[in-house]
Amino acid sequence: MLSIAHFVALLVLAFAGLNSVVATPATESGNVYPEVVPGPGLPSLKELGLTSEQLYKMTPTLDDRGVSPRSAQLDGSCSPWSTGYIDYVVACYNYLQSVAGYLCVIPGGKFATITYCSAGDAKITLQNLADRTDNGSPCGNVAWGVQWSFTSCISNGRVGGFAPAYGNGDMAVGTVNINY
Image (cartoon, rainbow, N blue to C red; front, side, top):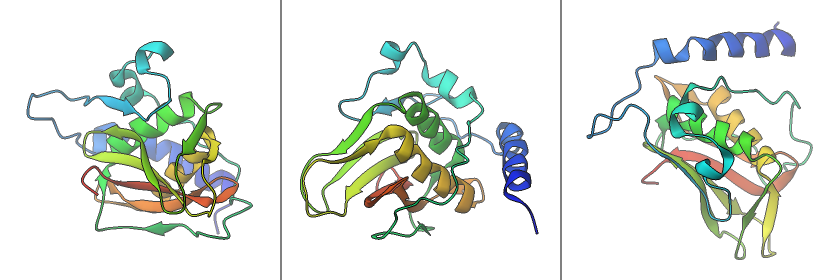
């Protein structure tokens, strides 16, 4: 049986070689690094001093907090019917980690959904599972939900899944196809 430390070490090694193993599809214009588009209310890449290319080239810093302490409304699940390429998902994950201290908020009531990052054919969505308005969590906790999906739901270089934001079982983090 693998310890958590060994599992994380294997994941880091897997991601270190990911760009050489998984081909990143080029867009119609031939751009290898599709634009990473932040969600509403979050700083632009320019404001952070980042470029889309940098977000693709960053090695993801994995969050080792373990199982979310509050996921009463939602347990993680994979969605093979709606997936995005791993490189696009990880670029959005890296963006959300770069704004970890900002608040990712879902305006609106129960089942309201908002996109907090998109890149290539992938997007990261948040859905309110609570009966209150303005449900939110730090963006770093939202990134934890994305990490759950890309470490639990990868198949043939594609990722699709739903998980709670860390510590907020009333917020579903969707790692899905841009057309979902």
